Each structure stands twice: as C-alpha cells, then as structure tokens.
Amino acid sequence: MAAIGNNYAKRHAAPTLKEINKAWSNQRRKSIQKSQNIRSQFSSSIFTTNVLVSQRQTVSAIKGAYSSMASAMARVNILV
Image 1 (spheres, rainbow, N blue to C red):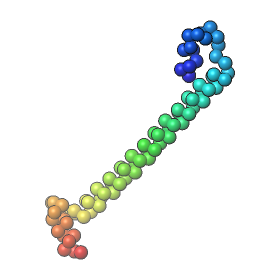
Image 2 (cartoon, one colour; image 1 turned 180 degrees about the horizontal axis):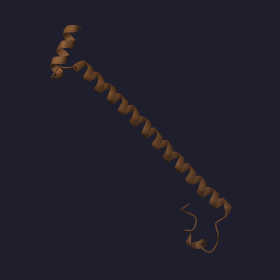
Image 3 (cartoon, rainbow, N blue to C red; image 1 turned 90 degrees about the vertical axis):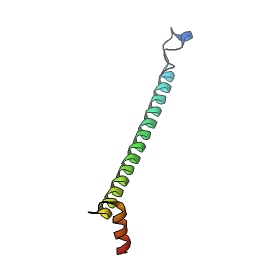
Image 4 (tube, helix red, strand yellow; image 1 turned 90 degrees about the horizontal axis):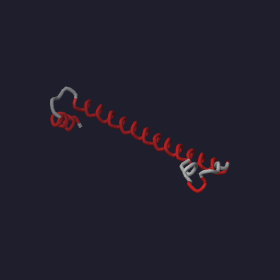
C-alpha cells in the first residue's frame, strides 16, 4: 500500500476503491509468497534434520562399543 498516501500530486484526494483493492491484492500476494517460502524452508530443514539424525544413528549402530570408526569398519569388513 505504498502508493496510497505517498502521491504528493494527489495528496488532497482520497484513494479510490480501485487503488485500495490493488494495494491490498499486492499485500495478499506478497504475504502468500512469504508464507509459501517459509513453509518450504521449514519442511526442507525438517527433512535435513531427519536425514542427519538417521545417519548419526546408523553410524552409532555400526560403531557400537568400539572406540574408533576404523575398528568398527574393520569389524564390518570381517563380518561381510
């Protein structure tokens, strides 16, 4: 709604309904776009977090009680 009230040539005239509707439709469009961006960022961050957690759990399961990842991988190679 930046166009409403900022036009110095038409400062004395009240905005028309067409101008108000156009300004509000721009605001609604921007708000919808922002919410869609936030929703997509949120869902992608949750997916990334879930992948990282599952990878961490897999590494922990492979490693088990061994002190290093090298000894854990050596055990996996022997078992396979």
